[in-house]
Amino acid sequence: MSDTIQPDATPRSGTTRRLLVFAPLVVFLALAALFFFRLSAGDPSKLPSALIGRPAPALDLPPVEGLTENGQPVPGLSAVGFNGAVTLVNIWASWCVPCHDEAPLLTKLAEDKRFKIVGINQKDKPENARRFLGRYGNPFSAVGADTNGRAAIEWGGYGVPETFVVGRDGRIAFKLVGPITTENFETVLKPQLEKALAAGG
Image 1 (cartoon, rainbow, N blue to C red):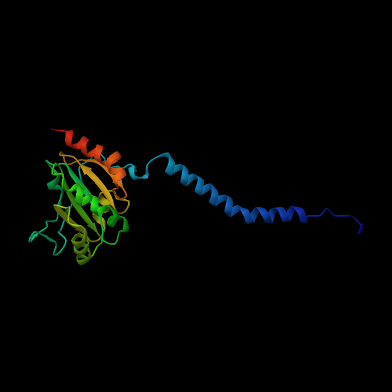
Image 2: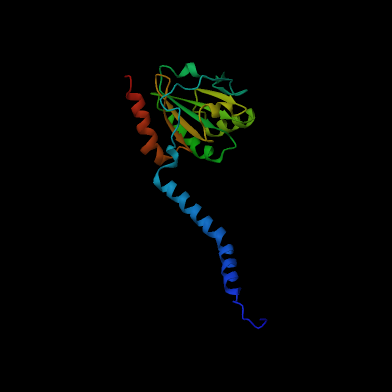
């Protein structure tokens, strides 16, 4: 019969519309909660590296063009130079904002002659790299120019800055993701350096 009363579908369709409107918000909040949990679960600066315990990549990087120290050219970077000394390897660039923040700390660290600091200058123009080191001081005994970013990939880098501790045996002992700060130096990096210095005399 034409007079048959049909159920009103409006409430259900209204509910569906509301769910569709709030679905993206629910997904966003779930992802945000997961991200927060992952950050709070551990220090993101201590991301694991598959290279820990392995020899430093056997890469020979040319020097930064025109970079000098006390009138002498600053050499490029060779894996052979890691053997026999504890080395801090810092991946940096003049265009990297956190690199500017950590630069004074690296200069301060260079005063400790128990280990050496070398740099991998990633995807930078030589004049910008020279200007950067002229502004903050050069803590590096050697700086390799990684013009295409391949060296950073070989080191298992996530980005810049990153810092590696290489032991006297030429093997990577530790990796710090992100800039060196006064806090993570004291609590994270310094203990790893001391451990590497204590190993093998």
